[in-house]
Length: 272
Image (tube, rainbow, N blue to C red; front, side, top):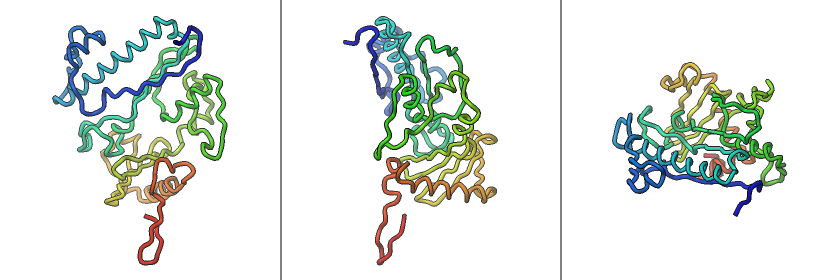
């Protein structure tokens, strides 16, 4: 029902690449424009599971292609901002774990983000290797659409940074430093907490076992050397920073439900 020139917002949550990974039927492949099927996408897969996963990626690409085709047919494409982003990555046993975010290593938390800006924004095609997070998307959309965020007791200040200055190569040194040096709190379902400090150091704390891992992401991008013993001072500093961030209910209560619950045992209160 949208007419040409009308503003709209569309969010599509695609589950194609979510486990379990299934091969695409020939009929569905044809609907997506792959008349010969999607077997070609399996090239390079090291296992049957990985080959099926590659098929799901190709199937999702086909669905995105259909959406873009419809936008062009309706003459919406040129003036539309399109953002494609993943929710988590995929491990292939780099650290003895497969697929899901059971750990906080980079294969699990580094996700793709593709941004196509409206025509006339003056941005050429480019690839940017910079530390950004999904929470930067909303401020970007707000700035692009001249939308104001109204703070209140529930929402508070809008988290994240607009990416438009970065995309236009007009980010001030101060804003770049602030974006790169912000501390990022990490959490996964398996009671593991983490912290990325100044875009370089990553701390992973396994609460059930008390295990601590510390990695230098600059000199050890594959996270193979645990520095928790050799960098005790830094490890202590980051553990304190992690505790402070996790206990900040105002900023992180939605991420860490139960972390600050006080329990009574033998007449004493303590924090788990």
